[in-house]
Length: 161
Image 1 (cartoon, rainbow, N blue to C red):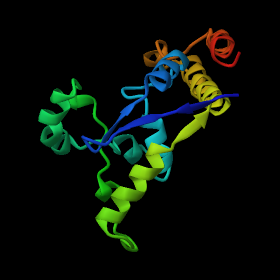
Image 2: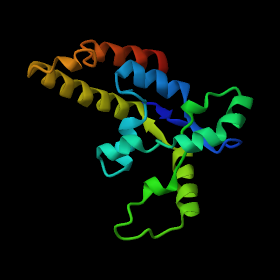
Image 3: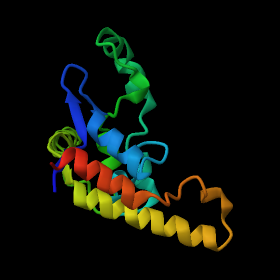
Image 4: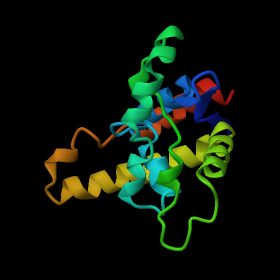
């Protein structure tokens, strides 16, 4: 079992990007959706679809576009922590936006997930797609990976040696 770092922090821009290793693995395993960290955001945000939007912060990307371009980066791919997305106002907030932003920046800088966990997530996603396809939902046919186990074994052979 290996650990896969999910994000790379870009201190000059105060933003993240998905690491190439994680992006490749997420694509291989079919857990990328429209963004390879969507499903992680759902888990961080009380396991609901609001979490898939945890990096929807287009204004912040536009603000950072000039510096991103100086670094040769596409600002549209930047993942920027918006502290307001990490509080719902129901019984708080208990911390300042600055402290929330710093906390989540530190959490994401250090976030590593085991390949075994990522494999299990892919298996779960694949099984759900298979069930929905069997029930007649043809929209998911492109998402089901009949060769998922072979993909996992190939990745293990290449990375866990």
